[in-house]
Length: 211
Ligand code: HEM
Image 1 (tube, rainbow, N blue to C red):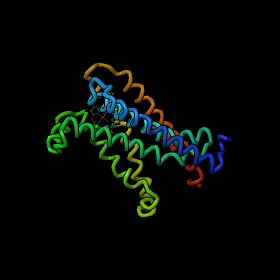
Image 2 (cartoon, rainbow, N blue to C red):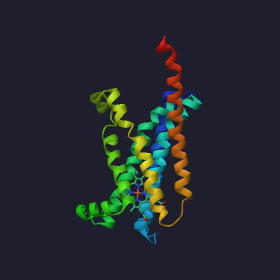
Image 3 (cartoon, rainbow, N blue to C red):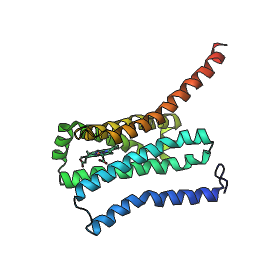
Image 4 (cartoon, rainbow, N blue to C red):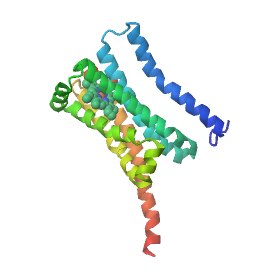
C-alpha cells in the first residue's frame, strides 16, 4: 500500500480500522463495569471518558497539519469520524456526570455547573460541540453552505482550549499540572501552526493585492 496515496479500497479499510479502534476504550469500560473490576467506577468512567474526549479533539485537530506536512490528503476523509468520536466520548463523559453525580436531575446538575468553575468550562465546551456534531452530515453541509459550515466548525479552535482549561482547573486543586501542560502544548502547537500558515498566506497574497 502506498501510504501517501492509498487506493479507495485501502481508504475504506483504514476507515473501518479507525472506527473499530476508536471503540476499544468504550468496550474496555463496558467490560470493566460488567465484570465489576472498578474500585471507584464513577471516578474511573468520568476520567477515562474525559481523557478520550481530549485525545480525540487533539487527533481531529492534527488531521489538517498532518495532511499539509506529509501531503497525505486522504487523512481528511477520517476527520469527520474522529470529530464525531470526540463528541461520542464527551457525551459519555457528560452523561456519566448527569447520571451518577445527579441522577438525571437537570436542575441540580445545572446548579453544580454554575457553582464549580472547572465544570462550567467543560460544560461550555460540550455545548459548543453539539452543533458541530449535529451539522456533520453531508446534507447539513449542503444546507448551511460551505462557508457558513466552515465558520461554524471553527468553534473547535475554542472548544479544545476550553477542554484544556477544564482539565487544568480540575488538576489545579491537586497541584498536578504535568498532563494539562502537556496537552496544552499539543493544542497550542496544533493551533499555532494554523496561525503561522494563515500569516504566511496573508503575506504571500498581500503584494499581489497591492498591484
Ligand atoms: C469538550 C468537553 C470536555 C472535555 C475535553 C473534558 C475533559 C476532561 C478531562 C481530560 C478530565 C480529567 C480526566 C483525568 O483526570 O484524567 C475531566 C474531568 C472531569 N470532567 Fe470533563 N471534559 C469535558 C466536558 C465536561 C462536562 C460537560 C462535564 C460536566 C458537566 C465535565 C465534568 C467533569 C468532571 C466532574 C471531571 C472530574 C472527575 C474527577 O474529579 O474524578 N466535563 N474532563
